[in-house]
Image (cartoon, rainbow, N blue to C red; front, side, top):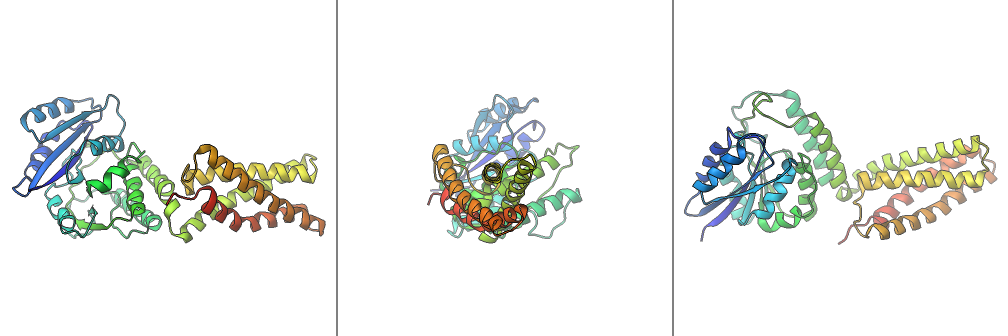
Length: 363
């Protein structure tokens, strides 16, 4: 019985290339490989939808899905993953930058039982290529490098379109995906690393188009990708990377703590309420940075439970903070120095309290 490969084709204003890429995909069909093409039109403003409907009438291998409003590539892929029925699921842009024949090579480690997921890397194989944008390539390599630091995967091309999954691997991940645009790439990579599945890379061919030819990704997407690397990958990052991030978070909270304290005491507030007020402000800064960057929101608890756990942690560390600060002031330390020392001593305790109790991931 032949294996079945489903390729998800997100489509937005690709009327000139959609037919051509479908023909190339269908050429992969053989006695040992069935093909399913899931075209997801993301509310194109050109004739892409009409082209897709004409192709569906011509080829029974095609399934169609349509978005009523433009949402982005990530949203189109989520729709496609839920529609796919193949043993293996891959991604194929509707333009001509990637050659579908490379999927035959990418399938080999999956069919052999060596891999659960395969990245198609544009940077593994020296080859003749079209020379295009220096900074675009540098951005891709930089984002891959940062992603690797947080996922602990040693891949060469995180931003590649070509990603091949066993269907049983991508379906549960698809239910968690949230990124609508190109943030999908670091998001799905983080979840792949978290799943513990076997990851391989294969060299692929790449024929990039220019922005004049319809390329859509830009520098804003690069910034979003960097945020997504942190937001989705940091909670499972190696401990040194988590500590480095919490140094930024804890440092920001400590600075806020000190500034709030100095401001309130300068306004004439007594030490005790000033300490409490400053700590409360710093705790709010810490919480917002924790769920925005380092830890996964609602990972162990629901929202109410998480807030209760965080408040408990704040109260415990608040007692520690207050005890150290007042104790040092009583011993003759300047108020600012005592507060700074208390903030420093709370750094390690705060990190492990939040990591192992408040925001602990479900096993």
